[in-house]
Image 1 (cartoon, helix red, strand yellow):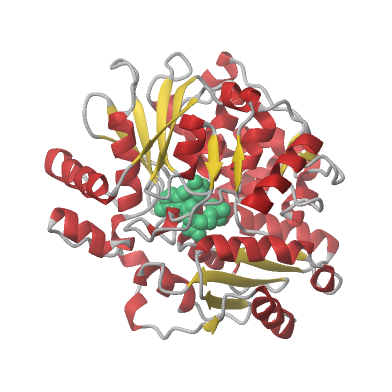
Image 2 (image 1 turned 30 degrees about the vertical axis):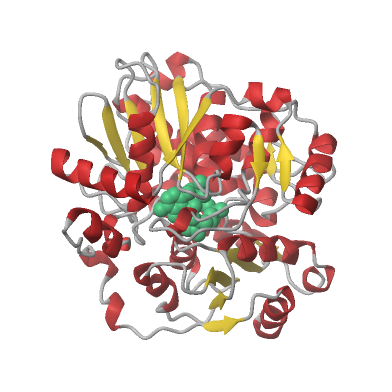
Length: 462
Ligand SMILES: Cc1ncc(COP(=O)(O)O)c(C=O)c1O
Ligand SMILES: N[C@@H](CCOP(=O)(O)O)C(=O)O
């Protein structure tokens, strides 16, 4: 399997190379040259498999000959062996039409663990082959940071610098990052938003002074391997609810468009999907883009769902490329226009190509109401991001015979204040996070300038 850049100029790479590269050298994102195909029979044959084996089957065509089938299975068994639920991503039924897919049974209580536990192992595997090392620079609105740090803390050949927006992540999220004591972990709080942090990360990849000295790697969903691992749970949910004979809709709380793009990939591979519902909070650039073709970023409004307080959505570029004719040079031009003005219109081909998607936006009242509804009617406590997904799922125009699965992207205890405000009950942290509030924190605070962040990384990377 070869991977090509969405901006058409970077060299095509194999899976091992793409995993270590993160962002393409032309500023684009890597996508498979073509989509692997599963027939209905292939998919039906996956029914009942343990999650780790299902993961290996779905990932195999993407991995190509970068891993033997046996080694891939060893890695998926190790990655998913750390989850607290035997099913890894269990489904919970809310009512006749609605389910939630709980993706938060990993070590850091968010869906990011599903991909990052695997990515940490892939880094180790590919770096040890070439006796190389990697300096990871990442941006987080809370969950990627903790999951990535858990996945790479203590590794000899990987160092991680994680940027988070100061004061804009929950206490649990921050402590999950800043209380990890490992010499290869560096936490940085910046003045600014997640978008500012993400823009700095992309700039580091293009900064020759940095890349001449350090091989920079990515743990954000700009890294293809993240998305590949997320495709698996769409298959897992579908197989449990009648797939491939029955088509499902999925509702996905969305920020960087990675999780819902993984659903698009599953559909491209042959999984019957009726609709992908893109659920946003008031930072609704993706809702506007899909509903009106208007992809224009305003300033970020802090909400009770801080992990999706995002306006510039990395993986939307992958969708525009895939549905808009796969013309990298044309897309590079379109993205340059967006970088300059922070606004762009989707082309007709892009709008028409995105017909599998629909979208909805939840304000703070809608979010709280969805949390209350799930708790009072179904006894299910949802975190605010999942509640946004559920709000969109219930608002979407989906035939009553089609099951709708909302992706539950975080454990409610990561956002106890918002959950308590909505339901009157304060969710407790599961035992597996240990004495999080007793541990000492360590992080540096930097101004929101690129130079301050770059100089800090250059001064501390070994
Ligand atoms: C809890 C939670 N829900 C939803 C999302 C959105 O996922 P994506 O950025 O892949 O759209 C994130 C992070 O981005 C998150 O941390
Ligand atoms: N919500 C994310 C933001 C980063 O998204 P990513 O999926 O691109 O890593 C977070 O929790 O950090």
